[in-house]
Length: 377
Ligand SMILES: *Cc1c(COP(=O)(O)O)cnc(C)c1O
Image 1 (tube, rainbow, N blue to C red):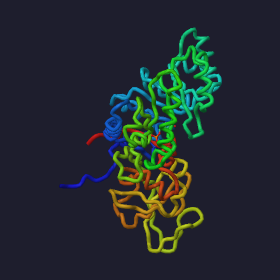
Image 2 (image 1 turned 180 degrees about the vertical axis):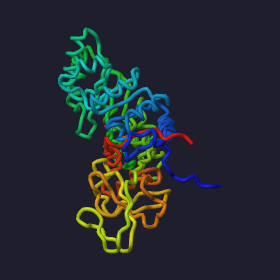
Image 3 (image 1 turned 180 degrees about the horizontal axis):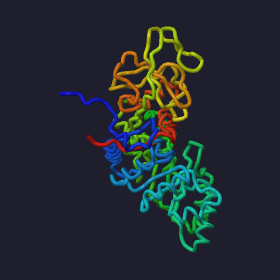
Image 4 (image 1 turned 90 degrees about the vertical axis):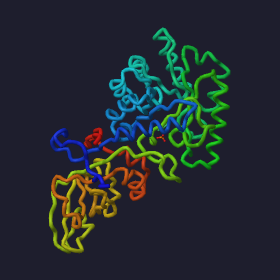
């Protein structure tokens, strides 16, 4: 069997002139990840978390694919993200995790967005908005079960239980909480949070429940309530880091070779002359840098791929450029595309080299990168 070379599939003619970095999304892999998460969460539905520009992958590309695959519920972090999503998906159920900001209630109502209410003050503000609107308004209640980040404290849940009038005018469509250690299945914090979630939820009027994030889906049926909120796993970040990834990384980040030059042994490359050629070398300069989210920490230790073969990054990472030693890759010439991230070079690998988390690697991908669907062969 002949191997299919790992090459970009986008048509250069479809790119804006001057584009030098492209993130190609494998729509089939995205759909497969969504279905795999659903299969693992049989008692409930799976909502897509598309905050931070769909984890850097591009909400405009990601959201329609998920919607077509049957996903109808979405979470963003910010109101602005939710408004972008509303333009893309006029009929979807859209919730905003970071809560109800000041002066925003009418915007939520107008765009049919659900605030995730995490304090008595937010509940009161939404109730006041319902009174102004003259009708009940839907919302999600966020319970703090130990993470101490967002959500109603136990004392606030007690107040709501004592005084149901505090929720009058609000239709609670979901009660949720967030796990702090779901990537570590043996951590007792998971069970402690799960119990606390059930205890607190039982003090409130009955409503569907949501606890699991992507890793939570893999904690087993006890963590499967009515709705999972999956982000990382959809994009193919491994939800079970101690085990082989059951999901597929959906992206391929391509960087274009702008120039190739021959340098003599001993000649330095890049800022601070942090790398010197030990032999006569060919250096390729690519249009990708830390301003695009390529980690600065990968200076002299990053690796890109050409046709699945490693190409070492040499010298510093500049704002808009990186340099690679292509001495052993005579086929690499200006206009070639090297792979900076992909299924064989996933965010976990870059994160390990850069000393950060795969989430940060992915969500850092910047606004100059063109996002597109990878055409089927
Ligand atoms: C980001 C986020 C998620 C998604 O988590 P993943 O680990 O990316 O699946 C779910 N719920 C809340 C509250 C979040 O902030």
